Length: 253
Image 1: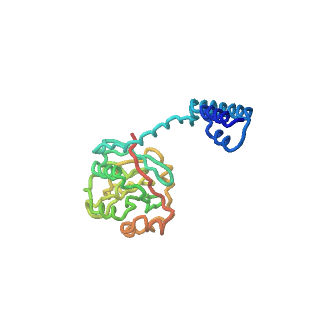
Image 2: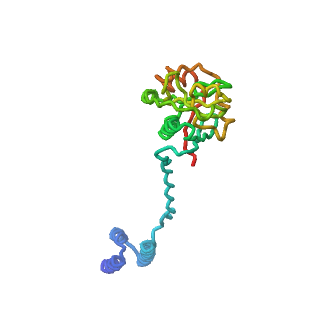
Image 3: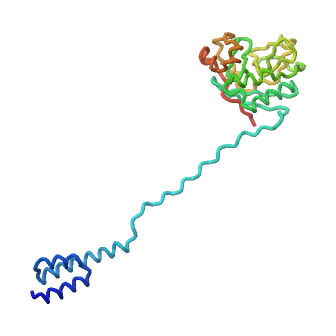
């Protein structure tokens, strides 16, 4: 093949876009048949490239949007003042029970109990004094700082209108007048002798008395109340680890 014919062929190749093939031809002799084959290959490559450019790129299917989580329940709404009659559920380590409170039985005691429950005061509080066939006592909070704050917030005594029968809820007090604060007890049996001593019941277990009767009496009156006041649950968990306790109290609507 003459040099002129070869250069003409190169021009055709360049027109077809096969630049690299042309460079190879400048370095070695080729035949017309080889050029034709190379052009056919290049044409196929060009067509394949054109098809690739016009074919939409494969994409990963877009997953369906994840539904937004349901909003967390709003904080339980408690009326500012205690209703005349209301129920609360005590969720405890040994099970749950419900207490119905009556303002007409002891309005001062009901308002204090309502205030404490509404603030979460009893959460994680232990039944620290459990005397079989008598009472289960609670009401010293888990946190000694909270105990110190409330220990001085006494409320006035009030007339006993409801007897301390089995299942009633009553504020504990000392022999001093107007000494009620935050401690309460549930009567395991009819303790009517407490009526003449000024213990005014304000509520009664309306559901789950069988759960109340399961409160662990193992330690009876061994826990020292002064130590509970000063150290809280740190003392009780270490020295009396199997005491039953209140997880939380909620209003029953």
